[in-house]
Image 1 (cartoon, rainbow, N blue to C red):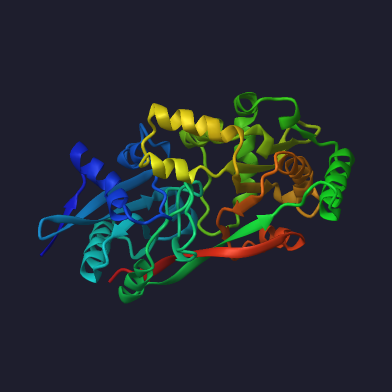
Image 2 (cartoon, rainbow, N blue to C red):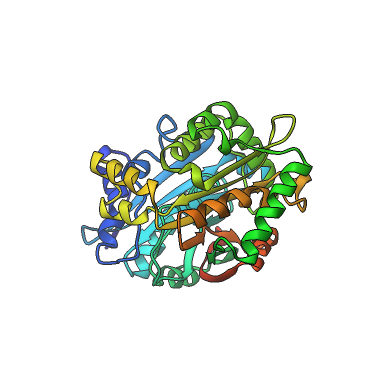
Length: 378
């Protein structure tokens, strides 16, 4: 017998946050989210992204044993923007049992019906900085802090429940050129030419990350929101949610792998964020941000062996003018200087051809794919 329980108490939220850690205990490639983030996901005082959203979370028990979890997110801003009546399912994790998966999805659908919604899709988070998409290939590769990992059977359950593919992403492994290689020289020259021609300045050459965030945080998101506005299900990040994201960047970014370009009017026109890949550290500490975790993280950030190309953004009016090269000219130099050999991209939408085309000049290969699912609520 399967029993679905709505998450309400502190104990239940802890079980919700820690269930996947137990589920993937013997999986070497799984990287958990921070436990505190999942415990507080529905609390707008702790998670600003939950503002303007209605959230319910559920646990599934079979014969008294916890065997699954899921959250339903009604993003009011998204539904209004896209003229849709949808609920997002998120934080979906389950044992390999189709009845359990069905019971969890049914709970989200019942939640949606309470609000007169007619479609369910996911896995989507609150916004584009949240985890989204279900892994469909690359199960044998280590996950990352920023992405969902799941067993292959998750997709089988989605198909059995009548879901169809919605959006798709790919992730690539990219070899950045060493100093002296023709591609290295070409990007450096093009980047410097672009900055000189358009009178651009890279803030990271003269300012610390904290100084950039303090003075240019809002302008950073103006650029981000403009650059990503045409992508699938994109909702602007604004208000208190900006501070949450910027606080995370301040903790996790190494200035060597950040580029923020401003024009002569002091507006942010392009940026690139590459984060050290610290998933192994998160996994080692079971998603708990303890003092030992923080000490180990700070030590790793100084000299990472693997990087994750997290965000690239150029204001739409400046695309195809070499602004990306303006960012890369700094990053390529630092990657070569620090002898980092592995760079992987975070998920890039299959439909985002402009970003995907940038890797054609590099040695690269697609190593993972993921997708979201959608169906009508009956």
